[in-house]
Image (cartoon, rainbow, N blue to C red; front, top):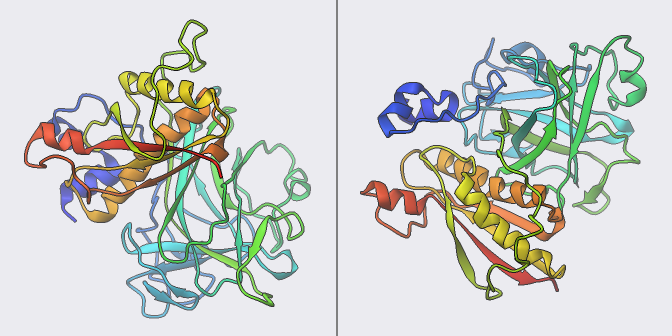
Amino acid sequence: MSLIILFAKYTYSLILICFCGITTLPSQNLIQNPSFEEYVACPVRLGNFETDVAYWSTPTKGSTDYFNACSKIMGTPENFNGSQPSDFGKGYAGLYLYAPDDYREYIQVPLTQTLDKGKSYQVSFYISLAERSDFAVKDFGVLFSQDILDLNIKKELSKMHLYKIPGNIYNFMEIGYTEFYRDTRDWVLVSTVFEARGTENYMIIGNFKNNAGTRKFEIKRGAKQGAYYYLDMVDLSLKPSSGTDMSVSPDAPLINENYELDKTHIFKNVLFNFDEFQLLETAKADVQKIYNYLDTDKSLQINIDGHTDNIGSTSYNQYLSERRCNAVAQYLIELGLSEDRISWQGHGGGSPIASNDTDEGRQNNRRVVFVISRKD
């Protein structure tokens, strides 16, 4: 991967932005070492996350793992739980989200700054279920705390434990999904938007429920072991203000257009600047037309597909395309569309509709398409 692409992926440098003629910086990632590339020591044993990964820690005594291609014992892609390519660099985390006797593992990181009260932020990360897991789970929990956590427990990090700590303040959310996270090959993007309370200094990721309360899916008959997930590419960014009321205007027509069902349509104005995934105002108007149409018939659902141009690595373009269609999906949700009526996926730069040799062609390739269908 070239230096320019690395800058685009991790720091969005001003040099690159000026080179590409872009005048607006994307939101800064408030997570240090987001893809676990920086390490204190190359991993040589299980349960090494706490000591080996720079900036990160574990809030409990659960033995979260760290994998990196530098290691023969804890390397990538092959490891004790199967095989998983490190698509975002050389390292990733591994942790149990479900295990016998309510055993749990977590990861914790300090934010680069306290979140601003009342502002909206988006948190996202990629996960993949380990091949030797017996279960898949449906929810990932994200906990923000004012102070760092260090509890002498190996079970679930429950409210009972949290509120025994005097003076700490929390903001908790679950990132749900319409299906169980059971993909053992590809990385799946997990994402949600939330409003900050102004006390968030640390972020913890894991399953905060006990076994009885965890929504799980048994993959193997007679399953007795756990649900072990790989986790990578963590992002926490300020969600840009739309500058407009996201509710549907009472003066707007209920239906702006009729859309043929089960046919691929291109969002006419949902195009993106190079290396960006924020929706422009012209794009939001286009998305609201789709919302107006979907809102008239609750049996309709939408599938969204994101694409990029061919600049950058395959893995990064896949990441960027997923963030773009996720931006459209999140805006539909903010407008009022139920999450269970939306599905989306990114396809990277492998399906261009124009030449990538010109600026105009590349912009047309940075697109989002959709298919509206009726629920079975």
